[in-house]
Length: 331
Ligand code: NAP
Image 1: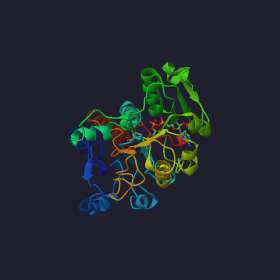
Image 2: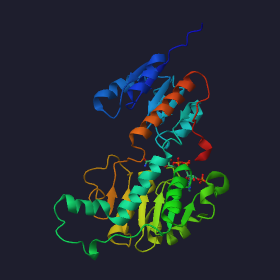
Image 3: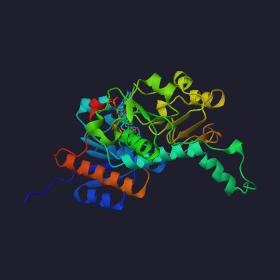
Image 4: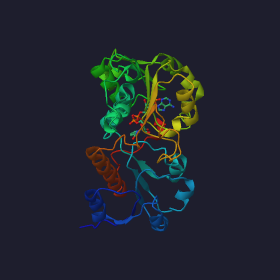
């Protein structure tokens, strides 16, 4: 019987014990999280021999890749791949895997939670109760804004965008407008949305939607997409939700739209710098509901992501085609 050759694997973010055990059964694994200063030297040392890497939320740029001459595969425990130097990976023939699909519904739940929280002022009003400020019936100054029936504009209409649209259109009777470079064939992709979601140019979407939710990948084209001009086009009293990546928003422009423009509120799961710096005005802004990047953060979904990412890595190291290779043509 042929014995599989053990390869060097670098795990750069915690994995659940069962998935770590799957890797350790077949390969020589180094666990080193470069975000922890005490583990950075071990991470750097392991790069020199690593043939496979698995993790997320750490920038893997060209200079880092140059210190990993044996690398053949990176398995990202995320669907977004904005942390990786895609051109350098392609030039070296390094396979990049990710975790599409398994986090779609959970991330759509998070985005819809932000829609509900901002419209109905849930966090703000819950704090009234918690802090003992509920002394009489609330007045009009604290009333919320209906979600059902409002027009939802979705930036990015892939897996997650369509899952948000299903919640909005089928559950809340919301007309949906969406922006993407190509129209989606709804009859094939999401038959429930036929007649309920309309491909709309970006400017028109911004002008017509009551709530705008971003869920598109961060790329050269989408970096800074939501700036002064885009916020200026939004309807007076509209709400902005970011469930994509922080850098698609120019945060100073968002703050200006909240403070001096007519934006009603913003619900943000992601930020240009994460964790959000303590001195960021977005942290405690009265019109902002801020979450610590929890789009996919449920017990079930984070485990499913780890399973898929581990399978991807094992398949690639075995010379098989992994289940979820990132398709660079999608960017
Ligand atoms: P997906 O299925 O690949 O969908 C991406 C959508 O964005 C497609 O409709 C695509 O359509 C559109 N798009 C791409 N580039 C565009 C551009 N330049 N202008 C306009 N539209 C563009 O991806 P997904 O699984 O839905 O995930 C989307 C993103 O959500 C991820 O990349 C990730 O950054 C983010 N995300 C965040 C969290 C979180 O924790 N908050 C969790 C998961 C994912 P066209 O190609 O036709 O333009």
